[in-house]
Image 1 (cartoon, chains in turn yellow, green):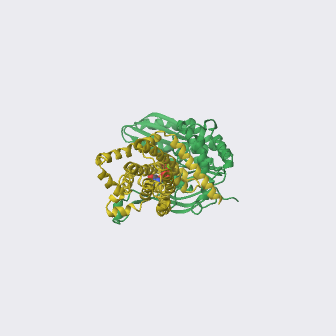
Image 2 (image 1 turned 90 degrees about the vertical axis):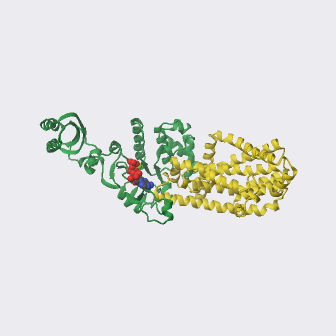
Length: 279
Length: 336
Ligand SMILES: Nc1ncnc2c1ncn2[C@@H]1O[C@H](COP(=O)(O)OP(=O)(O)OP(=O)(O)O)[C@@H](O)[C@H]1O
Ligand SMILES: [Mg+2]
């Protein structure tokens, strides 16, 4: 029991250390303000150019997307994209940097649980990610005059919070795998690209071919995006999304377990081959 | 009787050289990687309270040995006891009691202050919250960094970072400290300073096991030294006893200018002293000779050179060092 307490304290220390480091790279904050507004706005304008605000075109969109709110649709998708980006870059880069410079080895010298360095960096990225949501909400209101009801906002927040473990676990799984591949950048681009295509970030999942739709529904972000759109844009209530939320939580457990397993396998292999720090 | 601080029996670590591509794996081709023993049967016994040194050239297997003690590597075979504990069976217990400094300054967080670094690692070492402050202060004081504790590590000198890495190793208040090349890359002043810190550790009753490829360091700092080469211990004793194994009082380095064959002159010199090493580069012959008295040997060497048609360009007389011990054991210099 005391061991668990000690490890929890180590975990808190890891998050704190990570936050301190993030705070000292202030350019990161700039990207939190800039990209979340710029990218989705470009898509919305593009959509407007195509439709020419033709009611028939908007109707076609509403049919597939479930709501005529183009701006809201795209912004919700992009919020997910930004969140995912933060969780892929943050923990992946943090763990990889530690590996390269040798501090991961120093961490492995301590009796702390291996879950601490694995999940610590992700926790630190939740704060900047949640800032993203605020910024995008404000932009949606100021640029496109979209104001959701209080209820819808509340349920959106609940879905986001309950989705945190799943997103967080994806970040950890990614970070653990990155240790094996070595490079963070190209792998982030690839994985992020897959998510953009599969999870209905800028277009409805219904536009995908059948087999791709099946795999899309194996990825937690697909559900989270879909559910947020339902409550925010289509006026759905909590009962309509409960099933999804439970599913996403279950996926979080599985993903987190997979991350821990990959990390453990990597450590064991490193202890055999001595390749922890050299790739 | 207490258990020795470190004990290894027939410790072996086999590595694979080269790489096996995914393609080869997929096609299930036989593994053609060359296997070699980086550590090849090491028996060590480090007693409580001593400073024990592993001295050896690059690639001798020092780091590999340390990593096995520190639970970072799993041995291929052999047994290890660290403070009486088997690191294979109870790695977490070993980690909790061992202060290890392996990768040094680079393994710190440069964007944090020294204190913030230590706070993080104190938590990882499971130091209880009410002890953390005191533990950190003590570790900082032990490496003379108390007054710079709140500076960012990126503003530190290499020597300071190395000392901070040592402070981190002291956080668990370890009875045993292992240091891998603690002074590598430091200027002489900083090295001396770090060696003083290590001596203080012994004075506090801790056992220190360190590796080095600086023979002066092993000589000045260590109570006992194991000379290690190609993964094997080739000699193990106190520095003084090791130097006594060379039957010579003094070592003479000669540099001769010579045109023709150097066999005659080496033969002449060999009659008066032990030629430990000779190296010919074009018209220059460098000789290291072990002799009883340089005052007798050097004039005789001049005569011998003249009669063989060579000229002595440079003479240097030095006391016997561990370098000479290594040379006489392996026929090679420590640093090549
Ligand atoms: N992970 C590894 N995989 C394959 N070979 C390795 C690995 N680690 C070390 N070696 C090899 O094992 C041998 C011993 O290496 P080691 O790092 O233990 O030497 P060392 O005595 O610490 O040398 P140095 O003074 O250069 O630090 C070297 O030939 C090295 O190339
Ligand atoms: Mg080494």
